[in-house]
Structures are given as C-alpha cells and as structure tokens.
Length: 189
Image 1 (cartoon, helix red, strand yellow):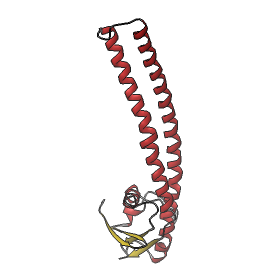
Image 2 (tube, one colour; image 1 turned 45 degrees about the vertical axis):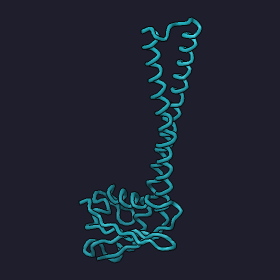
Image 3 (cartoon, one colour; image 1 turned 90 degrees about the vertical axis):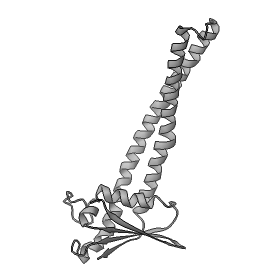
Image 4 (cartoon, one colour; image 1 turned 120 degrees about the vertical axis):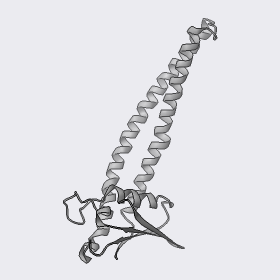
C-alpha cells in the first residue's frame, strides 16, 4: 500500500508536485478520530511529501496537488484537506525543534567527553616524554592505542552531532515550515 504515484511539473516560476493516492487511508491516519482539518497524516504520506519536496532547493516555489479517489472524499472534505496537510507539518515542526534541542545537548556532552579524552591524551604523552618511556613497550603501546581510539570515537561523535544530525534537523524543520505555507490543491479522480 506504499504505492503513491508522484508527478513533477517544472515551470519557470517553480515546481508542482502531484501525489496520487490509491486510498484516503494512505494520506490520512485512520486511527486519528479528529475530524478534518485536525486529522493527522500517515507516516507514509509525510515521508513521501517531505521526501519529494526535499529534492528541490528550499527557496524554490513549490505547490502540491493531492489526487484522491472521489469515492473516498467528499467535495467539502477536499476543501479542508489542504489545511489538514499544512496543520500536520506545522505541528511536526515543534517535534523537530524538540529533537534539535536534544541533539544539541547530546552534542555538548560529546564535546565535553572529547575534551576530557584530549586532556588524557596530552597527559599520557607528557608522561611518556618526561619519563622517556619506550614507545615500543607494551605498557606504553596498549594505553596509547586505547587513548587514540577513544579520541577518534569521541571526536567523530561530536562532529556527527554538530555537522550531520543538527544540520539535518534544521533542514527538515525549514522544509516542514515551507510545506505548512505552500499552495495545496486537491483533485478527485
């Protein structure tokens, strides 16, 4: 039931993405008892809409067309559906902001651990230098290897938090904010 047909129409002033859903159950969460426009989207619909919109620069104007089986949705409901989509993505922005705060906190923890590990490495190298210990001895080689691996792991983890995870959450937040403002039309087939 993941099959959703997507068409792209590129024009000088932007892009129109058309999503053709086989069933309203692909678009709206059937477990959500709230009436339109308060009904949430399914995870599949959220992933498809956000994923296809992610192909384009955030500043490029985009509009959406949602095509649904006429038997699944009344004309009155089709008028409320664009607001349901916008509402869903504007609500999800709050979740992404929460995830960004958690990611920032985890990144700061990683940075603190990386600094501690770097200080341990400096202390270890100072001891080896001051006492002129042989770098080839097992008592120096094993702790040196362990400290090197600890530093590599903590530096990579810190880098990943600030440059990959945090950036990805920021990009998704901006995209969800964009979806909550763009023109959305509903077609019945």
